[in-house]
Length: 407
Image 1 (spheres, rainbow, N blue to C red):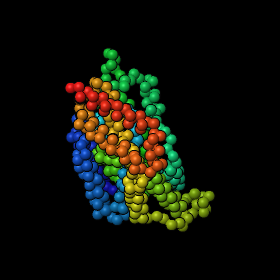
Image 2: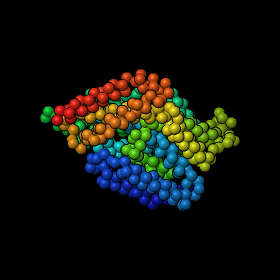
Image 3: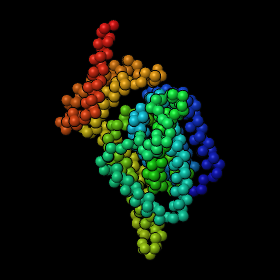
Image 4: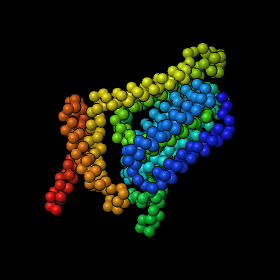
């Protein structure tokens, strides 16, 4: 189905307006979104995406509507996985919580620009060379297998571009609000805020390599590919703050994504066989194979994600991971507060009431270790970083209590 030019124009203007609104009314002034704020705006952006999809369903028909929703859900799931890496990068750079919104919005805009470029290149390529579906399918199957392998320690925040920037330019480890460049000892230097944006931008390009073939496996309509991708990225900033504590609990997400990417990869290979033009396969003639419908794809994707989330949250391994991870998070918050430089603006400091709450929650989580299965208890006991953080948090709390006792 050919999409009229004015529809493209209205859609692009609408997406740009949403991004501008997000920046002007939420991101421009540094602050940490509250949970109700993040929940409200996340629901709004998901609602906008659903309403848009219903519009596609009404005006474009059942096929386009199903393709949009299948693409949107897949891209949203991949975007949530991307948040893990964003979290690691911002933690590595110790980005002040209130300034993380700007970094996330930059990442979203850069991802949208990068993926739009890949979308139009991909659409032109598959129209010219249908055999590319074989490559897309094989790449997704390879990516799925890679996701199933145990993860090695990565250094996402210290990639080649960052190391090169630190070598060629003067940099500082000190933040100056959200400025990208600051003055230190009378000289201009790059702040960590610029470096973290470079790191986020670099990872966005890598994410697009998985994302675009995946959605082309569900639809080859450039408009549906673009809108499903764009709406999956919009609201990602709010979603980050909403599920920040939940991200680490989705321990089986990589398995779910592997299943989805593998499924789409198989779908692409079957489609390539059906449209075959390679002379060494069946004499260049189409091969009669079963093709997976968009409706079936949508059901499979939703089913895999549902099982993945429930297994992550309800399984013994998931509950153990949640308890251990939350103890680590609360201890790290206490330790990071104590180690934070004195020149960080007041708005970025955690107040004493929040620290007390974190300490109480950490202690409760530690007590819960005794109720875990022996293998999970052993995992917590053998985690040297966790034990160091817990010991340091207890030490800081004891000093704080002694100080208050002397007053």
